[in-house]
Length: 380
Image (cartoon, rainbow, N blue to C red; front, side, top):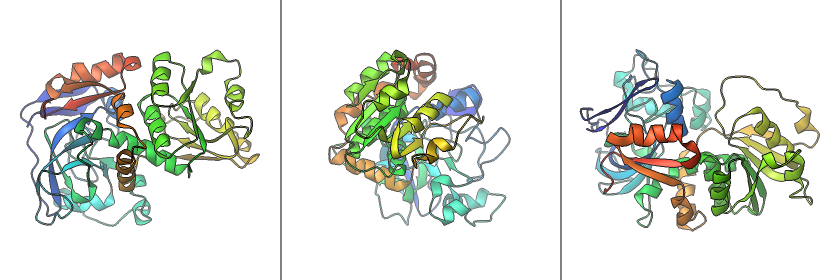
């Protein structure tokens, strides 16, 4: 099949000779890919990896597979064929795929594993598979992903989408699920207030996820004018921290009656936004870290939480329930499809995706949000 292969840091190549994945297990589903978004994690893998992908000459703990592999984990498609035990989907169904790989997925690949111990880690035992100690993703270390024409993965990861959801927009369900999970981590209720720190792709998705949770007031703090304009189009108020000597005070003054926000979402991942995420909260508020940080320490004063019983927590990717709740929110109109369209700033075929996708996002990130790769052609 055609697609992109990842070999390691700054080694991404287009090929038309990738072995097409085939059904192997009774619960396997083969999906013909429509669209797959280029994720910030894909860019990190290209510039700094391997991170989730296995290192060269090493094998995935989940699947036993090694490089090269097709990236791509934010995708939609149409079911091509199914294994003998599949009951949830059938050929022709339009689907999105919850892309995580964890202990339960090792069973699908046990013939290829050196360590055939199928026991679950502590996180998987308490039904937090998104925190699995072996966490990986199809298209990000486990198996060929959706920068190729086909993906084969387990039935339990498949979610049908409604007929009125276009396949390009459906590929946004995955990043929206990341944001939706983060909002759930804040125990967020309708009518509550939130500040989103950073107007990049995940920050913008967090605005839509908050709209889906029927937030009362959403403020996006972002220094870049282009991103503030897009955040406003999605329904958020915007705030430029560079305009103020004391941006935290000015953010809190937007809500004098509660002396701060119910929840904050750090989508930037730097010392300043971490501090701000806590300081802008009202009493009892919750700060959620959504960003993926480099492995370096930062300063933290615990009493900034203790004085007003604030909480600071993290959010790690998603679970299948988040995908279904996002799909339901789109169906109810709580997440508006017209707003979703604003997040897609480009579409390319796989053969053009290195220069037209990866390099565009690396060199022109201020004017791009989500570029979609269409490995089976833009007219699918």
